[in-house]
Image 1 (tube, rainbow, N blue to C red):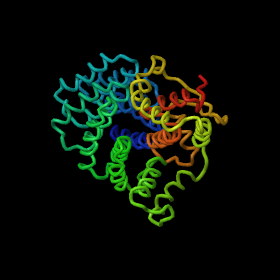
Image 2 (cartoon, rainbow, N blue to C red; image 1 turned 45 degrees about the horizontal axis):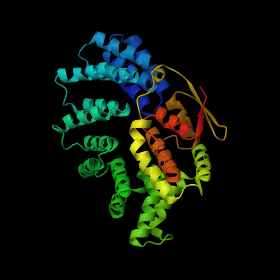
Image 3 (cartoon, rainbow, N blue to C red; image 1 turned 135 degrees about the horizontal axis):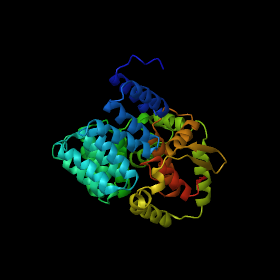
Image 4 (tube, one colour; image 1 turned 180 degrees about the horizontal axis):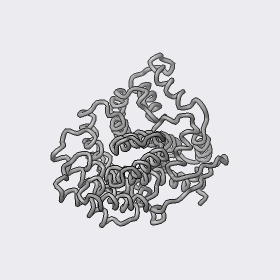
Length: 375
């Protein structure tokens, strides 16, 4: 790699660049080389642990964090990483104990650490614990938009839509450019029947900041319905351009959705559709997004076959990344890609697909018959 003269901090920075770009193999290589040069660098061991988590290599990730703590028992990021890893094994009490070490070190009100812990709890379906962590943070970080948004998502997962809308409104007041929270709020308002409120929120999100067709189409439809803008009005030009970007080339997700749409066409009336939506919203987080099975904690490769016969192999993240790349949009964040696909599925079938992790996303798709997992 030609990096033998780098400091441990420079190795970490380089690995971070690869990690943020989703290139976990390169990040892994950089960190291994760095640890060979600096075996006592806690920073590099922790970075390697998080890279292992991203690669779903949880047993090795745990070893990395434990090695870091052997070098420095008060390294807070290592405690958080170890807690995240233990959650993957279903060892909730031990994980909570690790997170508790943060509080014992007097770092319970650290915003970055607290958000990391809360989000880890949220991803594993521990919504009550996540809510408690976010609530504790809010006493000292009441004006943080990301924290308000995280509380909003968690309250929605717990069925408190009123509280969720309140927190998401507060988040967008604190940061007008928090587009994901604003779109989320618009969908909650739309589900509640507040169409004008939903449109008001969507109007504040530029077309380029939308990552799914549902929110774009919803804006167009509401603008036509509430403000009387004609479908062919030049006003919609940038929105149609955004839709064209989404639909430039048919991809595996589009073909799968078309098949599902055809199977539902004429078979689901409006009343049944509403019932499906209500049922999906009630069961969404608790039935689909529950903790992974113990087997999911082991390093493993998976094989997914789409209805058209396309095959994707690798970790859950790698499979979703392959699907995203086949759409011709390799720069799109994986989370945005999954949200886009989930919104399309909900738009056409009335059913929700979880997007908190690639594993949950794919397994839900398999349960719906959109793809087959061949272990």
